[in-house]
Image 1 (cartoon, helix red, strand yellow):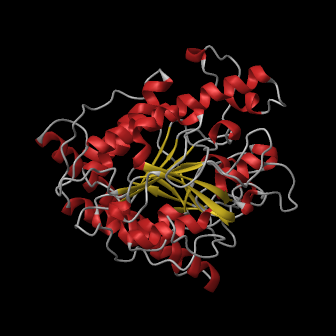
Image 2: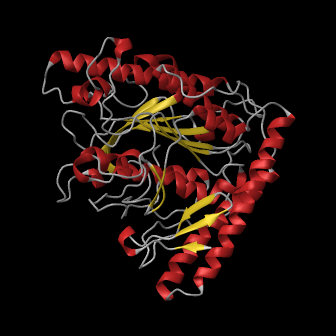
Image 3: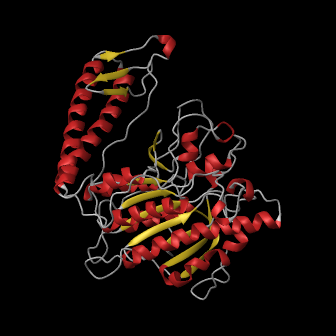
Amino acid sequence: MIHLPSRSFSRRGFLRGAGLCLALPVLESLPGSKSLAATLPKAATTASGMPLRMGFIAFANGSNYERWLPKGDGRDYELNETFAPMTELKDKFQIVTNLAHDAANNWGDGPGDHARSGATFLTGCHAWKTLGSRLHLGISVDQIAARQVGHLTRLDSLQLGVEGARMYGSCDTGYPCAYQYNISWASESLPLAPEANPRLVFEKLFGGGDGAERLANLRQRLARRKSVLDFVLEDVHSLNRDLGRNDRQKLDEYLAGIRKIETQIEKAERFRLPNPSIGEPAGPPEDHLAHVDLMYDLMALAFQTDSTRVVSFCVAPEGSNRPFPTLGISEGHHFLTHHMGNKDKILKVAQIERWYMERFARFLRTLDTMKDADGTSVLHNSMIVYGCAIGDGNRHNHDELPVVLAGNGGGSLQAGRHLKLAQPTPMTNLYTSMLDRMGVQAEKVGDSTGRMASI
């Protein structure tokens, strides 16, 4: 049965029953949200037939660029002090400088660099200030890949974070929070919230329980979801008969999203659950370092078990003002980045950036110890972007971005160097080049203007 609340309650419709309360999609008379279309078949393997993985890790608040920028370029370069934890991994990654995200700039819509930067990082699209839930951005690079290679794995993609999702409300100077806290976008109006609870990520990857119990639990969950979907489809089809042309088209988009979920469920039934090499987490650790490391470990396991080949990880949402008491830092990270030349604040920012780089280096070492069937490492067969859409945290510029490209892409990337681009280049050009290597057909990503053959 379809319940339509009175106009005083925004005339929003809900489908109810079987323990379900599901909002209707965007209609001219009923506000809601659009859904995503289906995926396209395409391969994502290396020349030797190993899975090729693609990961995107976003950190917050830009960098202390003077401590980030390498000395020299090419293969004969020196790592700057922020990269001290990466010294032993120097031949496993490349630093790419002179990348830019113009869409994160102020295009006449006032302040809000953090919201725009979070939204732009993987989409290359500009976020405009809008009211309520009226979001308009663009599909992110990870989801472009997921549409075409997601059929190869049990999960088409995975979104990770360390802070709770924020999909509603107003955040940075009037921007909807969805722009600031979500880096993955399935469509121009559908952000994909990062999961911060490691236990829920673990169950998504490996199921709950032990051994045969895990498979039984998975089948039970799938059966319940199927019954819910059947209910939704029946009621939505009933509603469709009473809608106008525009609303029927929008409802068709919604049904496409429901069908996508059905396809994912059927796919999950075809794939065997992999065996995890770690026990099921109890939940988010109280210690921030342990939490970040655990999410990195789950990302590594997702790649190792080929549960998915596309992962995004927001290691800190834009504007994050987390203090670091274990480093003796009581002030918030964001506050410190606006140091205005204060040496004490600059040194504290340097400590925080080094801390994040230590966590990233640990993750790369983990990937490097994981072996694929051909004897190469998971890191060798990966393309991992680590970066931010803000250059210097004090200046809030969106050029000279701090970007690392780790892994060898199965032999297609030239790791072990500083790639200094001759002129400011859209970061989305890097993304289109990565998609090419992934076997994904994409004319462009956001504001991309071409490819970067030099990576």
